[in-house]
Amino acid sequence: MRIVIIGAGAAGCFCAAVLKQRFPQADVLLLEAGPAPMKKLALTGGGRCNLTNSFALLKSVDEAYPRGAALMRRALRAFSPGQTLAWFEAQGVQFTLQEDGCYFPVSQDAGQIVRTLSRAMQQGSRVELRCRSAVRRIEALPDGGFRISGSDFTVDADKVVVTAGGSVRRDFLAFLEPLGLEIVPPLPSLFTFSIADPALTALSGVVVEQARLSIPGTRFSASGILLLTHWGFSGPAALKLSSYAARALPECAYRCPLCVNWLDLSQQECRTMLEALQREHPLKTCANARIEALPHRLWEVLLAKAGIGTQVRWKELSAAALNRLCLTLTAFPCEMAGKYPHREEFVTCGGVALSEVSAQHLESKRFPGLYFAGEVLDIDAITGGFNLQAAWSTAYIVAMSLNIP
Ligand SMILES: Cc1cc2nc3c(=O)[nH]c(=O)nc-3n(C[C@H](O)[C@H](O)[C@H](O)COP(=O)(O)OP(=O)(O)OC[C@H]3O[C@@H](n4cnc5c(N)ncnc54)[C@H](O)[C@@H]3O)c2cc1C
Image 1 (spheres, rainbow, N blue to C red):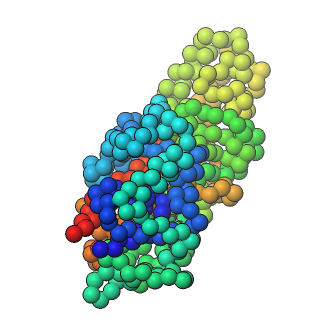
Image 2 (cartoon, protein in one colour; image 1 turned 120 degrees about the vertical axis):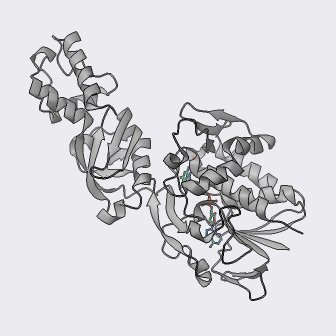
Image 3 (cartoon, helix red, strand yellow; image 1 turned 90 degrees about the vertical axis):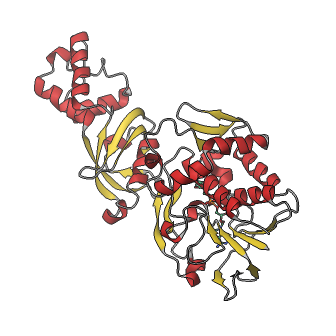
């Protein structure tokens, strides 16, 4: 039996490695479009590879997976973050857990994960890896099995695993067209926001530890660290919001009003803090005695936006001015003027519709013997190791579903 895996990324290589553990003599051919396997994996987490997450800080799996949460709940039961860590630890990788729930290898080197998977794929009769072999077409054969072709090759397979990842290129999944599967149109997710407010972009480098970013009039809202950059907003809060609103934002061409709560506090909580400042520092200027959670440069801009001079003392602040400051801190209006144009998005939402696959085996309902894993499925997550966990869990399910006589 010949198994062909299309795409040597995280999901494809992990699937091949687990398959080899189960069936060392299995005939596995891994076709990769690029010049080498796992190119993206080597770049993950800024080269450190945020391999997975403890999930401890989440209220629910839905929070991490704006698309595909139901399937991921099942997939995480089949192969959890704990099992993922144990699998890599058994191969000699040690991990460190950050306060934010993210796991990284102690080596802080994504290359170690790439080398570990490469080694694991060489167990038994090694996986045959063919790079520079982009698949252009896949068709189901009348008597069972599949024919896969590229510009200069054709191979037949009994079982096929598609792990081609994600891309917003229109022709990206064209090779699946002969099968007529439903494809959810791919769109970028996890991008940063251009903001048309020179007072904010002048604050490039400022970090706000706990802010909330929302799109007024919608349910889209995300909290966390917010980074101010020379083009606008970045950091976990912005990336998370881009993920939650990834399907909605193209409808307004990535231009819409935004609301920033710089402290992620209710108006009442914020007012209590301001009144405490007023009580404790009546003679200090508003610029000098500030809410400590907000960096000085940002505080001065926010005072100006609220129409409060930096030399005004706290005891001189009128009730109306305190109200304005409270609103500026908790419901600051600004405009998203587009996605940041010069940076790749981190993941694609969309891909093969989940209705096309059985949740238990990730096998095509219409074409038995055809499986899907990783980002090629309509599953994507916020940042924090959740995207790679989706790749590990779905690839594991497929590897365990493939039975070789
Ligand atoms: C810069 C960056 C950093 C990231 N950091 C993290 C992180 O730290 N933690 C995290 O959880 N997620 C991270 N992600 C997201 C994560 O890398 C992806 O979700 C994950 O790699 C998806 O794995 P995959 O195997 O499904 O797809 P990929 O890793 O993209 O692999 C797909 C492979 O298929 C190949 N392919 C595509 N089409 C064909 C074809 N027609 N024929 C043959 N081969 C084909 C591609 O060349 C590629 O090698 C990051 C993404 C980026 C871009």
